Structures are given as structure tokens and as C-alpha cells.
Amino acid sequence: MRVEELTAKVLQNNPNMDRYQLALAVSKRCDELLNGAVSKLNVNNKKIKAADLALMELVEGLIVVKGFVDIGE
Image (cartoon, rainbow, N blue to C red; front, side, top):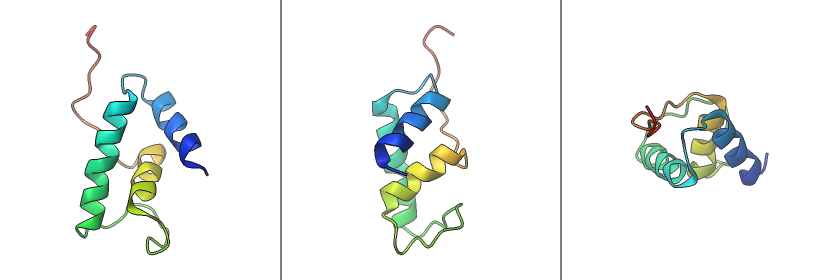
């Protein structure tokens, strides 16, 4: 799946998240993956970039982003 499609799915599934917050979440998970964290997906992570892997984990709902709340709440 293309990065644009993955991004659209994450934003669709998380209406309280904007693109900036998504970029922060992907960046943090990417850092964790590059520092030795194990991927929660059953894929060969040697062939996939860490940023793409982090985005795929967010799409699948395997990573929960905490701290993003709606201002109206």
C-alpha cells in the first residue's frame, strides 16, 4: 500500500489527530524501531523502511497514540 493511502487511513480512523501529530507519532515509533524495538507486524523489517513500518503499525491499530485529545472535550 502506498504511503499516501496509509496516511489517509490513519487520519480517517483517528479524527482527533492531524497531520502534524501523525508525523510526531511516526517519528517517535521510527526512533524506537531504529533503536532495537521489535516490530508488532509479522513482516521482514530488513526490507521495509522504519518510517513505513511505523505507519503500517499505526494503520493496523497496533500502536496507540496517547495524549491527543479534542479541544472541545
